Length: 247
Ligand SMILES: C[S@@+](CC[C@H](N)C(=O)[O-])C[C@H]1O[C@@H](n2cnc3c(N)ncnc32)[C@H](O)[C@@H]1O
Image 1 (cartoon, rainbow, N blue to C red):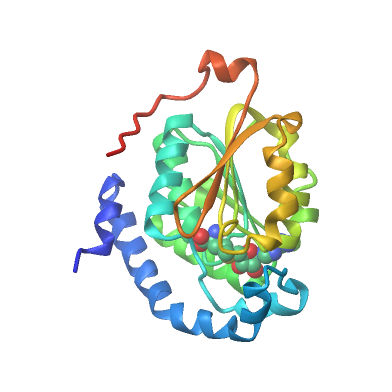
Image 2: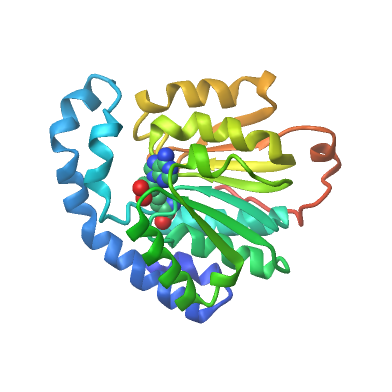
């Protein structure tokens, strides 16, 4: 079987690669128990109905439920292409995605990743992992509900990773969107897996009137990539450029 950690070879720091490999393997081992938590929700999912996250979410309080390796490397490379110095993350969990984002910010010359997490024990463990990665000084994790903790945000934001539970996805996007610079981007996880829970979010971000161009990419059952369009976007202002090759 192919080595799943091969995707991490794109990352320039061996210490960070080793840590991410270890954390992803731990997350992989939790996967079955995460599926079991959703067992009683299968009828809702099959019928295309939303999950009652306010009652359900706490079942995942000890789970990584992190981006997979490809998504993490995608976020890292996107942040590098954008030359991102200020990144906001909705849903930090144990800090796996935050490590990819903070590494990109460090490689871009420094800046800030603002993470958010409603479970204090998860935020504490995320800080531990970021310290181990040597990236903690670039990260601030705001504890509590992101719809409150992100109210006093400073811009410009280069990249938003939207990876919290569905009920707050659109409220958080609406809070952060005005701070996202033209040409900046939003990566939103789980929108394909929980389609019904994200219908309002997708309708909003895909409505050109709200300033984004947006489409779902075939990563982890469907990951939305949205780019804020505007004058500076077409001028290709702050990014470093990227190459995409498809077979
Ligand atoms: C899918 S996990 C995030 C995984 C993380 N981005 C990673 O890849 O390592 C979602 C996290 O968002 C947190 N969360 C959900 N709703 C939230 C809210 N309204 N405010 C802050 N955190 C929230 C959950 O506690 C959970 O840890």
